[in-house]
Image (cartoon, rainbow, N blue to C red; front, side, top):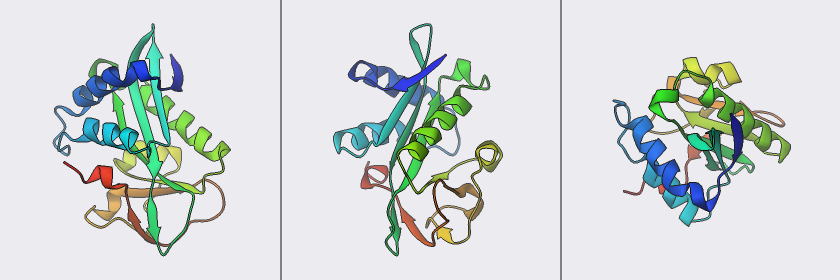
Length: 165
């Protein structure tokens, strides 16, 4: 398996992988593929990586800037993370998260936030941090990981692409 930046030729496969990955998930509103497309169209898809095996895309991860109030800079949101259903549980998602965080760290990013499963994301160092709040999300599912420097305090907002329908 290789992890690489997405190319224009990956876009349709990314959509298909994302739709399949979230199709039967009770927590999903089935908007994840559209979020990625809107982030891309608005120039807010900071980092978009695919996992490829035998020249076939089997997973995808997206990172986009978040806004924190009071103002701070250099923080990103992880998500959506998608792995083709027949490849879930094989380490693809973990490889995508590790490589994405490594690339953010190397770019000088201050930190990363996400809404997700604490059992999965905790292994990468993400923790619920009461100092950072994401309104509308149960606190135990909203986590942060400082990448350089210290944790900040405030209210997090994702790019408007996350709220569009």
